[in-house]
Length: 365
Image (spheres, one colour):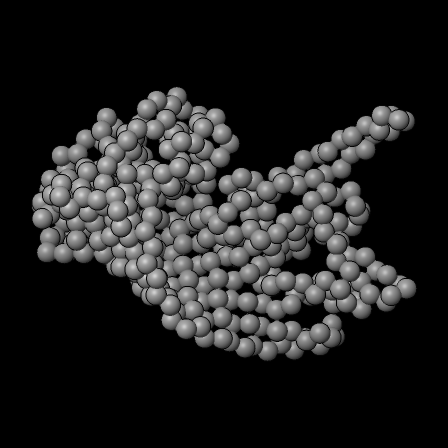
């Protein structure tokens, strides 16, 4: 049995947990996602491409992509989540802060999803003088699957999601500690107030309230607008600046004292897995719970990076693409980044929300 929505309003944020134990929310998400593969070369811009020919009679042909690829996915998901307990954690919620013990709501999330996927391939002529191209598509069978997961939610001035319960044990001095925390929203924003996500690419603004139906209840939800800072069309160069860190490597030969120095590149820890680059759209929040959302999300997965150059072998009559994480291999080496960009549209509507009786609370799916 669920108690009335208004019970949630008595929850104290800051000293206690973000949510009361037994809070249960369910609803449906309808989403579409377009995944396209790109490559950015420093000073040459960004192009849609997948793979490389790598070896060809000429360097221009070796640099050409195998094909361009876009995967389109449509998903309908029934989702429910329940707060089944609470614990404490010393996980940092604000970079650079003094970290004390923080109450964390433990959440179990269950989803049932139905997915349709279609892939579009654009092929190019193998002749560098022939600019013709053609498209093919494949339709995958509909798939259905069930997923259950655990995560934590904690709050102070902001509400944060700890992506898995293992993050409760994250060493607060670890460089990955803050990367494992996702900013959900601000705890008690005022109308018109602005803030940004942790990577600075999305700006949020409170835009009054709106009456929203959640099952049989009508709630007065806060309306949050989301603005994208960066243009998706220039995302490649932007990602190179955000994700790639160049440093000067210096070495002294102990035998003759000769010094050697060259640039080397590493991937920033925040870009080491699929991450959200930015969001635009609108969210509706009631008592710290997302009850409605219409958004477009730009997610990025870095596939490869480093320096690339092309070497001609006159004896074999071929040109070969070479790559390295160090720039010393060739004076012609240029910094590159290959990534998959997923543009996802999502509509989430909560259809049930309330605090259930103790007998209905469970950590088991």
